[in-house]
Amino acid sequence: MKRFIISFLLMLCFAVNTKAEKVYEFNSTCQQAYSEMLKLKFNAAKSLTAKAKQANADNLIPDFIDNYIDFFTLFLNEDAGEYKRLKPIIESRINSFKEGQTSSPFNLYCLSMLYVQKGTIEIKFGETWNAGWSFRRAYQFIKENKKNFPTFLPNDMLYGGLQTIAGTIPKGYKWLANIFGLKGSLTEGNKLLTNFVNSSDPWARLMSNEGIFMYCYLQFHILNKRNEALQYIQTKKLDVVNNHLFTYMAANLAITNKQIDYAKEVINNRNKSTEYFQTYVWDFELGFIKLYHLETQEAINYFEKYIKEFKGKFYVKDVYQKISWCYYLQGNMVAAENARADILKKGAVSADADKQALREAKSGKWSNTTLLKARLLNDGGYYKEALQLLNTKSIGSFDNEEEQLEYAYRLGRINDDLGKNDDAISWYNKAIALGEKRPEYFAARAALQTGLIYEKLGKKAEAINYYKRCLDMEEEEYKNSIDQKAKSGIARCKGE
Image (cartoon, rainbow, N blue to C red):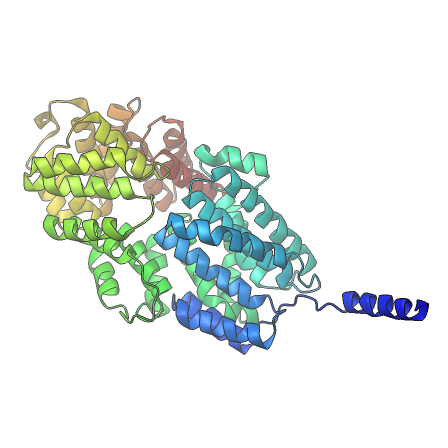
């Protein structure tokens, strides 16, 4: 009996000690799954990750790819019910990765990426404090991994992206950066990400599409190289038809850059197969495309379809504001007021656009129709039509200071977009003088745009001066997004 007990204990110890270690095998099946996932072909990706799990249950890479799928699902559709279901699954994945093979460079890299995705989703669902902790862990893990595995190129993609963003955190979120120790450098972060995108390293080639996605967004929003980012998409002939992640990126950046016709072409020409993840973001984007051309009824149709299907809260108030504008421009004040009432009741106020929509709804005031039409036409890149509309008025045509301020800003912005720098700066300075002490965003944005003009002209001292004036203003609309752009401008001018 004694011999039996000893033998049994030895067998038990052997069984415990030989427990299979969690590994990171980015094999051909996983590589194919990763590629399909980045195209937003989630069913195909899931089928492949299931196959990889059958081949090796201890391989963590299939779970890594599955987490991307959950991330994109929650980020794009914002379904609270799905978040409740997926949140414990994401937490469980993170815990399993903590048992991973520490000798692999993928161990801390995967953990960092999982925490980035977790933090981003937490922001989407209003869990800002939790998001701060997630980003802190992500930053610490990738920083340590870069130290332990300096030649592992995927580190540069993730660390470079985090550094760039951390270097331009706006004042409204600076407390998070200070508490959680996030430090960044726009110059260093961009250098790392650029090197990754241009590298011939095998891992960099495998992850090139993900790197390109990050690179284009940072070039566009942080480095203010808007035209260059869109030219990169077209010069590199990125597949905006069959890769829906690229479709989304190209359309989104084109709309923001006032290239409406290109955005419409990209969305309408995308592969509409049911193999792709079904998201309502296309209706959202098409709504703006129609709105900016003053096709108000078509815009209403797309926006209302989006609102009907979308489960989230980000930009809901913004969309109801745009619906109310459409009805207002049609002269249908009953429908306009009903849409405005929905602004007060629905959505959240995490995004600056939602905050502005709520503020306008609470004010009870409606924009001057000429100024509103000029704004929308200019936002769509229809500069000459917008200028022609405003040239029928003068600053004295408007009775109150807010409308005079907006008139000056709109003329500055249109002339800016037409490349008429002197006229733009003149009108921007009038807007700053009229609105520097007011709560509207026009003066702050005028200062920001003037800084951008001077930066483009190589006059960095003047640019920094206007960026600082922008930061000093206490406007209440779009504060975080405008401040981030101003901080980015100062960092670029100083080479930080």
